[in-house]
Image 1 (cartoon, chains in turn green, brown):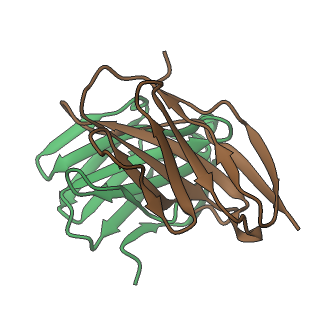
Image 2: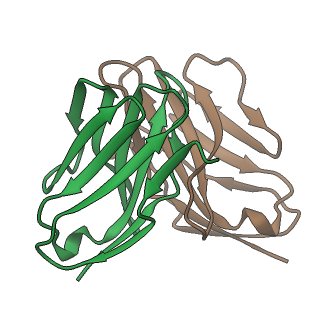
Length: 111
Length: 115
């Protein structure tokens, strides 16, 4: 089984809808992250959490919110989706100084 | 200023040849780490190699090595004996170890390996 799983893998939604992307990990890491990837822009950090009670905004948090339900679960919500949130979304996890392990990604399209 | 700069949007190499993908970084933190990730067309992000700022030796992992030149703030990825399966997007990233240590990614280099 994969160490980091993301659901759904693909999602098409309409402008104004609320959508939640879910992430689970079995690595036992405290740190979890959400990124979005747009062509030509690399990966940009949306939110990160260093433990269950710690939530921090990243570079591009506007329009997003997160919830850390447990050490292993970190979900990303788009309260009112807009077309420029169409992107590939990655969840990742890491130990304090280790490399980040990424989930397979969620391809989100907002029409 | 960008913290990670990858100046090569695309690179071409023939199979079995070596290729160097460039990465320069900007930080005033004395303790940091540099990472390279591979993203094939299937989309997943695969960790390749890590170099710590205090490491004396250049990191190596199989056919991957990191040419770390601290004074020049460069951390180039060298892939020896390229294979067709190396065709992918490659990202350089840095973690500054002070404060909240998250990864900052470059914009990536697309590598195409031809037969």
